[in-house]
Image 1: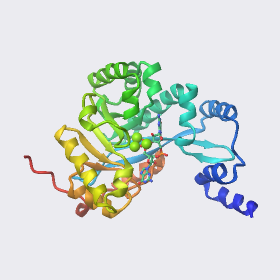
Image 2 (image 1 turned 90 degrees about the horizontal axis):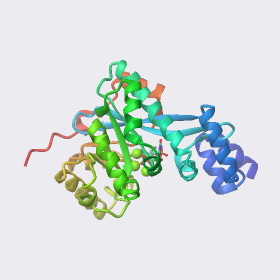
Image 3 (image 1 turned 180 degrees about the vertical axis):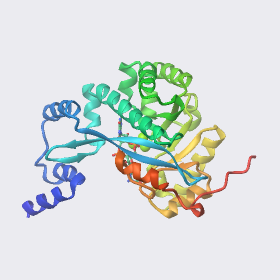
Image 4 (image 1 turned 60 degrees about the horizontal axis):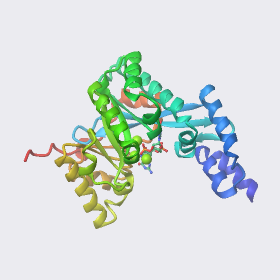
Length: 299
Ligand code: C2E
Ligand code: MG
Ligand code: MG
Ligand code: MG
């Protein structure tokens, strides 16, 4: 019955919100109401960051984290970013939220550095609107100084659409960010329309191969050859490669065979709250040596 379904949906925690929205429609609210609630969320500390490790495929070790935003909404549960970031972008709230994310992630990185994980990097996702409305280089400089973390340990993840909107403005900001020493990554590569060689005109250092490609590498010959050519193309352009959404040993094996530099995905770890990530760092959790690859010979 509907009541039973509601009850079990609540038990499932983070999926509850999606479930209500899609299947029952009972919690579909007015936009304005969610917008108001989102203002409250920032003011009342309902936003939190979870961290997902990035693992180097040569050493098998965690070298960095990506900060992923969640909204712990009273009475509803943990709301994933896809459910509220588009609205935050439309309304402009992404400016305040984005600054909070950057500060919180860098503060966490400062703590991890102080605990002895001195080489750890932190990646933060950035929206187009932030570049349009905020002097990102100036903000980044200020936050790095406040948190006492070196610029080379901060990575900004940008999608192709961020690069395409306000091209000139973004290029200028990215060049300044490179001068500061920040690492720039192209997120969700392959989902847009541009070729890697076109995107190389932007000062990016890392390509994150979208999870839809990784999903296909073991199921389809075309999927495998597509990903293989992305890795090869990235290498020829001197871009580091990170595979997103790695869930199986088979996918990991493929990435090793094809010398992808790093992986991220549920196979190694889901995004976790900082305190849980502390435990993983202290435990020295890593991939077993047999699931790593040797450094590619220089050609
Ligand atoms: P993204 O930056 O491409 O992040 C990767 C997404 O894939 C995350 O979803 C992550 O939890 C999920 N993921 C990681 N490993 C796996 C896996 O093995 N399998 C599957 N199926 N999924 C995996 P999440 O956390 O829901 O974030 C979704 C998107 O929301 C992000 O995509 C990013 O575009 C955006 N986002 C998250 N946090 C922020 C933020 O602070 N600011 C901005 N502007 N956007 C953010
Ligand atoms: Mg990302
Ligand atoms: Mg991505
Ligand atoms: Mg994405």
